[in-house]
Image 1 (cartoon, rainbow, N blue to C red):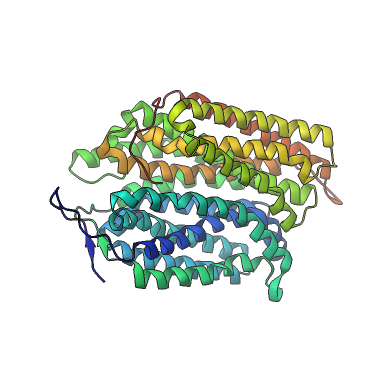
Image 2 (cartoon, rainbow, N blue to C red):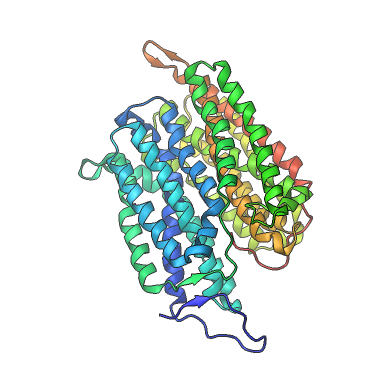
Length: 491
């Protein structure tokens, strides 16, 4: 198998395309599907997992937050590991580690081991995913690049639709008495497929300009994120002692120290995790605020909705997964309208505001549905609001990164893209912690168990907080460039 390295080629010649490039793409997509499924499945299976292994309500939050936080921190350096040690090697290490961590999740018998295994999944996923994008950019000629990256949309869309249904079906089916554990065991064949495909079809690939790892910067980012998330998740159960607020306040100077450390490292000729010049750009800082608010609301809403329909309305895991299908289908419709119908090109930044307005209207429609239906809420009554919410999400997500990146210089694009992707994951962790805590804090428990009517109150509170987060995103979007760049960006 021929090796692929970053070398200069004469402008009038084009090297032959890599022979196994489409098989390599299939292998990379298998890994992407594995990650996306694991980001979604615990939202549906969380109540069943807690009922089996025990633990407090915060376990349901940690199942998602631990994975996304580990992914966010790991993504900061995941791509550089491939540059340093080879993308094929790190892809295989990431796939093997992710699969092993999935098996560890499946055999866990305590909340602590399960959360630790989810952290391992997130870390190995952060090693695995960035390598695929780097390999695609090398093995596909420019004329096929659009088709290669275009394959991600349908595959990710189908995974988003199938993920909740698959999780609910596997939990309800209880194959061989495995129950919820099968949602992790399903990664075993996917992981083996990715490993075998990588060994056979992925070329050796590394950067000719690999940068050294900034472990100090990673430590500061990790510390700041934990200072914020741990008290958010655990504070309610502990009665909100003073140290929880002190921890949350301490995250601000830690993140400020990170910014200073990055600037100092850059001045000293080192390789910062984030180019310091980015923090002086309106588009980038606005993108950070918008991304954090938007993805916090989006992921937090998904958790709260699953808890509401399962614990409040008594839906089975499969019925809960099916209830979320209108939102997933709406996301696909939004993507099609933004991309295939050309709304991104015609409207630019205004499309973000259109999508956010649709989401806010759908969220208020959800509140009205809860008020009118009372305890007789059915999936069919929820479908219109969820479908509209999904369409708005698709309209926002399709142009989001490209519009932000239009405001940075070409040499800053790699750093900005990696940072925004990490913020997307961090926002998910914050959303799970914040909205999950608000949800559980509103539910009232009596001697006979939880007050079912209070679940509707909890969901309404989450919905109004979602509206507030959408308003923050709407305001921050005014700082972004009016149009995306003409050239393609892959995310």
